[in-house]
Length: 135
Ligand code: AMP
Ligand code: ZN
Image (cartoon, rainbow, N blue to C red; front, side, top):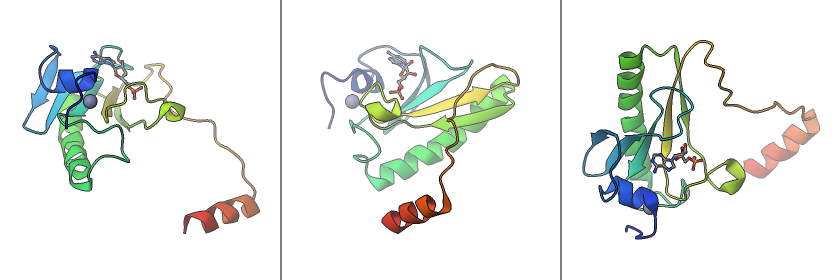
C-alpha cells in the first residue's frame, strides 16, 4: 500500500523528482538532501511501511541485499574509506520520516561526522537482568 500524504511514497514512486541512483520494481535509491557525507543515499521501498516493525521479512531481506550492492558501488565510485548503514525506527531513535528507509553513508577519513553513542557502564547484574528479559 502507498500513502498519498507520505513524501517518501511520492518520491519512491516518481511523483516527486529525486536524484535517483538506482530503481527497480521494489525500491528507489536516492541521494539524501541533507547528507552526512558526500554520497549519502537512501533506500526507499515503493510500498509504504512505517518502519522495520511493519516491513515484511522478505522485503527487509531484499533491502539488505540491495544495501550491500549499493554500498560497494558508492564506496568504489567515491573512494570512501568506510561505510555506515543506518536505519532509524521511531522518533526516540531519530526517525524523522515515517516511511521505512535505510541510510547508506560513505565515510571519509577526517570527515568530522559522528554516528554513534556514548557507551553505558552497566553492572554484571544489570546485563544479566536485561539478558533474562530478552531470552
Ligand atoms: P531519518 O531521520 O532516519 O528519518 O532520515 C530522514 C532522512 O531523509 C534525512 O537524512 C533527510 O535529510 C532525508 N530527507 C528528507 N526529505 C528528503 C527529500 N525530499 N529528499 C531526499 N532526502 C530527504
Ligand atoms: Zn510512505
